[in-house]
Amino acid sequence: KAGVTQTPRYLIKTRGQQVTLSCSPISGHRSVSWYQQTPGQGLQFLFEYFSETQRNKGNFPGRFSGRQFSNSRSEMNVSTLELGDSALYLCASSLQGQARGTQYFGPGTRLLVL
Amino acid sequence: GIQVEQSPPDLILQEGANSTLRCNFSDSVNNLQWFHQNPWGQLINLFYIPSGTKQNGRLSATTVATERYSLLYISSSQTTDSGVYFCAVLAGGGNKLTFGTGTQLKVEL
Image (tube, rainbow over all chains, first blue to last red; front, side):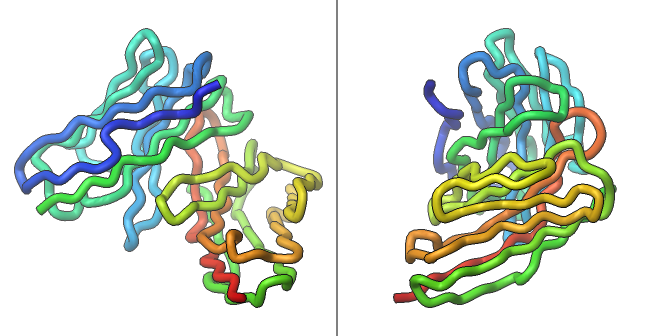
């Protein structure tokens, strides 16, 4: 099976712009989670989607949003970008939304905000 | 929320040496995973180990859930083992992983 894929892999934006990142989970996986990794804060949970519904949300401002489509692909959007949004954004998929089983991560999208 | 601590934060080894990385967590967990983050940033699954012991080649892991810690053993280390090792736990419902701060491992010739 193909792994988790994320597009784009690299992105440069300027402050105030918005950005949309995409994640395609492993075939058959219904849960998709998003994480932000920065040198200062480490890996932090953004949100999780399961069957097109947001199940959990981390402690991020409303500028961060996401959605999941019927084929389980997910997008996350960041509006009004700030310099501090520069980070590696990782997406993970798992078979179920039952807090068991392995989560598999994609290669990430590196976002640089200038 | 649950706290996850990893030690040591940094580790330098000579090729061929063995090492033990530790992960302590503050509450009961449903799931614990160990990852290796490669230089390009991807998190590579090493173990899914909420309890017990598992081995995969030169790597093995043990989780003692009742005492709230997990250990990752790397034997006969190689330069390709370099990178950051994370443990991550799931507590409660859903799939929200809480990550430790990682152990930066450097294996030298």
